[in-house]
Length: 275
Image (cartoon, rainbow, N blue to C red; front, side, top):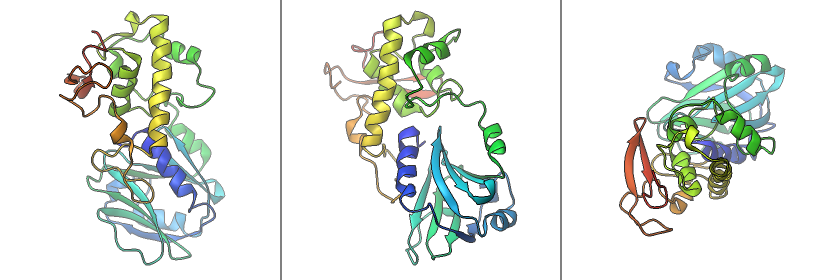
């Protein structure tokens, strides 16, 4: 699933093309389950004539602010990709939702598994209500070590599972939780109660480090992820442990192992991350 770095990269790409464009209409919506808030016909009517004012990201959601107070929101789920294409561009595989702009260009939501979702919220209040349970953004300056410690307080369970919880902290998925735990030297099965103050601070900085590095490398492409221009990311070449089972640890040369934690494939170095 695309995580914070992949979604952030896509937003930055689309931000170069979409603001100021006016939606002519809905060109395609062949899988209505992808649009929970509206029937395709109603979505097309609501979007026609709307101008895109700005793009932003919240957690793993792509937010498009429209005129008249509306917000068009995309969640890529497992295999979704969002591309802007010039007028006359060749078709993209697995396109299930497409918007046409008045200049002939298109925004295409492509999703092989069709788990992705498109929402239209008629006001900021509706949008905020949908997202009110989401935790803080880990890369904002306002997200301090103290806030991270407060979020962990009174939590129970293994760290790997907790860090995947979007109500605790947003944007982290399996890849970057594995990477952050390695960078901080913490075993995925450790519980919050076992962490020292130093451990918490190391984990805080590790989370921000691996996310920022992945954004610099335009995301991680292990299978389906492509950026807003349709290109693969480069961060897969920089991973420490994820998807590196049997390969030597880049720090100590111990072979990376894979275990299952909370039904998720979890990669670690047994020497650098003591249980």
